[in-house]
Length: 287
Image 1 (tube, one colour):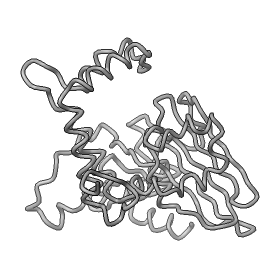
Image 2 (cartoon, rainbow, N blue to C red):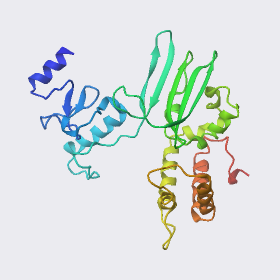
Image 3 (spheres, rainbow, N blue to C red):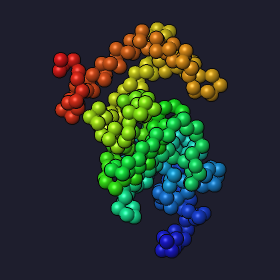
Image 4 (cartoon, one colour):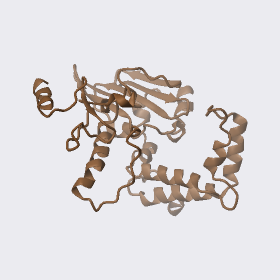
């Protein structure tokens, strides 16, 4: 945009194919912040990444947290990492809309720089296609979590629901991988609309996940390490794959630990507390 470039030039802002910013969203003028696809990181970071490679909503949230203290200096926000370190972004990068021919399109995957293809190992690609619902593809990475989803359909679909599947282990999705290989899922659209999936799409499911993570990180008392630490002890030379024998060992540790009962209680509390929206699940208070 010539007008945008002219405005940057008149403000004496550094422009290197894009507007140059640091990791705190500052331009070379400390009073001017910038974010979004028009920006890029300064060359001193030796980085190929830019804000266009990340989830726009997440970038906006981090920018808001950065400038918030300017409006309310009394706020005590968590300390930010070194300005020489790029901030970490975890949400999926999402593209979508209604394209030519009235087709509804959605593609989300993990952040990666520019147009470079993903280089992480991929174990499984699940694909269904039907004349009624259209094309649906799910990419599952080596850690058995959802890495990418692509949808193309003539009929509208539940975009928000599919976005909540990013990063979720396939076993939480009703043993997605096993059912697909057993040819029990002729159409992914229909499978992901079944009643059992409502618990995953609920807006409080992310809170449940975080509570479970904190539970697994809690030491078991005395000199006993947490479940997370025990699993980390099995990681050798950066190989995050766990053998079947190691899985059985972890399973026995989990079953015999207090973490199992605590996790079950959290899950039952989640279903009971949100029972109005999740009536399809049975729990002890209903029996």
